[in-house]
Amino acid sequence: MRENVKFIGNFVFALFLILVLFAYAMFQGGFVSWFLFYSFLPIGIYHISLLLYPMRNWTVSRHLSHHVLQAGGGVDVTIHVRRSVPFPLYYCICEEIFPDSLHRIDSRKEKYHFMKNPDKLLRKREIKRIVFPYFKKEFALNYSMKQIPRGEHQLRHIRIRTGDVFGLVKKEHTFAVEDQIIASPQARPVKMAKQASNFGQGSVTSQSMHLKNTNVATGIREYVPGDKFSWIDWKQTAKKNTMITKEFEQEKSTEILLVVDSCLYVNDNHVTYDAMMELTLSLMEELHKQGTEVGLLTIGETAVHVPVNNEPTKKEVVRQHLTRLQPGGSKAFSVSLKEELIKLNSGNTVMLITRHMDQAFHDMLKKLKQRMKRVIVLFVTPSELISDVERNTIDKYRFEGISFCILTEDEFVTNPLEVGRL
Image (tube, rainbow, N blue to C red):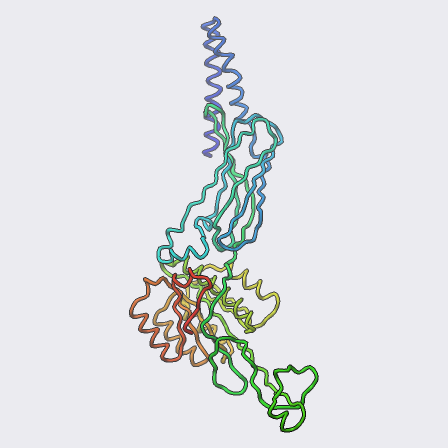
């Protein structure tokens, strides 16, 4: 409605000027009056033609250098405009309309310096480029988009404005141009202080620096071609006067379930949440490299469970899920996790990744400790927000056998990311 009123007003104004000058020339006569009329006549006709010129018939497309990247990366964008009629245009202003998800920046590990003040990473993106098409039927413009944050971002619209030299007529049209940018969390190298492994020879959980430990010798047997030289038991070989090798019982693979708190909290911190996504992906890749079977359970608006297995497609499934995941849900994390505990096998090692702790969380930990072989909590938070009460509570649960690791901005700005004191 507003555009129609503006169109009618501009059309009437241009037509009014032509008629006024024509009337002036008819009644006044003389060279000057007719000179003014004929001088303004091309301008008036151009203004009316520009008003009637249909911009909506233009073909506008967008080309991205790539659609999938890691968070913090950049994309080069080219906008192509094609016109069927080469109507003379003095200028065109092309504007990209960005979604709300792109109105912040991701400087990779440098962003964690602002974990306690995430608003400093909020930046309104504005891209406007001016071109002078004149009689060209096709023209293009380029721009670069840097520091793209994690998530799926939908680019839907491009706005183009044009007008005459004098600014009497201004036109604009918004074109629907659909494109998608997918920025996945960055998988960083992780330095883990300790890992848990469970050997088949006993029920005691052994703490070691690596998951790929040497197998435990459970007996001896005669040498078989293909046995490693290091397996030979030289004492038994000397006694029996024949080649004897050690017989090993294969170590049971350690199973770890990563449980991610994706619930929505008041005054939530998007930098802390992105840190959790980055930590989760990094841990899964690091544990997978070490031969551990890792599963994933995210609890937010819905609970999504990626089972414990080493299927080839699992890595990409997890990456896509952590890319799309956003805080949500009305239930508390502790309540939702209790409901999911029924579906989990007892005896697994569970690693909880969260950014919020309350009394309900502490009660849930006690029940989880009774069901699971080992419980590890990775608490991601800005260092200034850790209260003395929380520190005392963490020390208490460490004493009771629940491993806690506090990860602040100090850990996330370092490379590799160090997950210590497990």
